[in-house]
Every structure is written in C-alpha cells, then in structure tokens.
Length: 157
Ligand code: CUA
Image 1: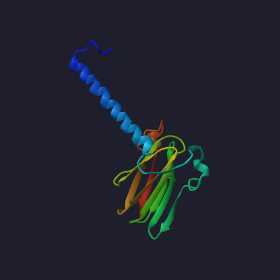
Image 2: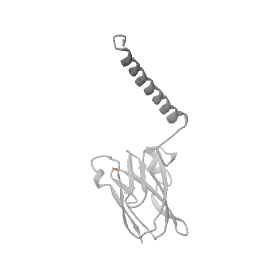
Image 3: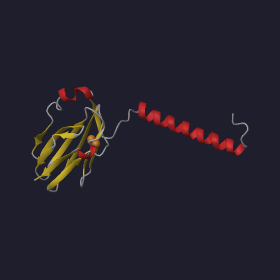
Image 4: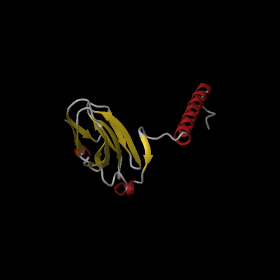
C-alpha cells in the first residue's frame, strides 16, 4: 500500500504509526492494568442511588472534630446541596462529593479546592480555610444550560 512512496517517507510513516501504537499500549496499561482513575477518586457509587445512599441521602456539613468538618455534598444540574456552608476560621473541611447526573466541578476561588465530580465516583478532598470571608463554590465543568448559574457559597466566620 505504501510501496509507491519514497523510502524516507515510508520510514517516517512507520515511525509515526509505531509511536502511536506504543502510546496507545501505554495508555491502555495505565487505564486498565493499573486501575488509574480521576484525581481524588476514592470509591464508587451507583449514580441512580446517590439520593438513597448515606451520607448523600442527607447531604450536609457535619462536625467531626474540634475544628474539623465533613461536607457531604451532591453536585447536580444545576446546584450544589448543601448550597451554603458556614464554618469557623481555621476549619479543616473534608469534602466528599458526587453527582447523580452528569460531570460537574467544584472550584473555590482563592483556595486550591478544584475538584472534578464524576457520576459513579465519590471524590474526596480536604482543605483548611485559614482566612475569613465569603467564598464562592463554582461548577467549572460545563454541565448544561444552567451551568453558569450553578454556584454555592461558603462562609468562613
Ligand atoms: Cu454543573 Cu457546570
């Protein structure tokens, strides 16, 4: 099929195809063999059962230590539940968040909270809020017509 091409061109073509094959094999081994998943991934959940599976049947902020909290949250089109969170300054928050519908994100500007929320996965992340103020909780993965309105508020007192 490539016999009519000049020799050098054939060599480059084979090199290109060869490196593509090597790349795909590496990717396949990483994805399947090593079981790599989205960053922060801890465990899986059935998307249809999010609202009947603890703790997401009662999404809430719970105090788990002296100044330590767990925020069990749902991200769905087009809101976060709970949509408003208030914590004292210096609080360490363990976020655990999942989606019953499509891919969402949770981004809190001026912090390093930047989470991808994938249906079927519970994403966990922790952050200590050292500065008082109002923080926005934004969805930063396009999720549909209401994406730009999908936001919550986190108040550090
Ligand atoms: Cu949810 Cu964009």
